[in-house]
Image (cartoon, rainbow, N blue to C red; front, side, top):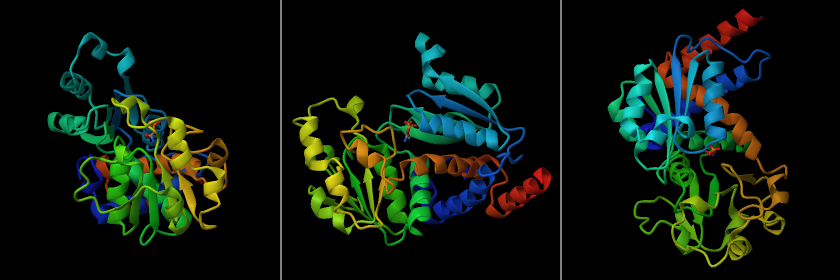
Length: 319
Ligand code: CP
């Protein structure tokens, strides 16, 4: 596989392969010197046209733990401010000698466009409303770690599905691995055409909660709302926010997830975000190892077997 632009590039087998490889990199990340020479001599460029904390930092950390060099691009301090196009920016970055480019952009399809212009491998770090495949991979890895697997799990994805690239990638990944997904949202926050979505839909969060293993809250994406989709945020929170009362409707082993950044007090109460069943920080932690696995698969030796060999060699090196 050359690029990772959407979850369907991997399919179920590809996702499982990333998750297996991630196990090896979790082990590396837990060491006192969390570094292996897997991508020594390679360069990973981070081309971020939209704000990010988790994706940018975890890709940078992942690349460094694999001994790759990194090149950071931030639109606010770049020649994009002088009118440089996406294509010229991508070609300029590539000309400096990069092996992989992680692209975050506000427009759906931006990562695909970059992949069509450059020879380097391209990873979609989130494009508009379209997809965020590495978020879905770290979510699958987190569910597997918490609940033993994704197959057969009942997962409610709650909130602003319409504007959410995370929802699109998660639905693709969770259902590919055999989960049953229910989208819970007001009609105005669902895509207008859901033909082909392998999901159930509900508008009643209280009715759904007792039957799920995972409740996955989406961020309310104020920056992408160009029309009035909700009467008030307070009404949204009353009907769809995960409050302490609603957590008590969940089964004892159910977990609470959120991709971040959270709007505490809107889609999730401040108290719930800090409960033990909220695994939001585990998602962030797993993001580094998952992104190590993705970079390794795209520009490293490429197989779990080789990763395991590298990891054991590094154990020997570091004692
Ligand atoms: N979940 C996520 O993509 O977070 P960032 O926007 O901080 O990268």
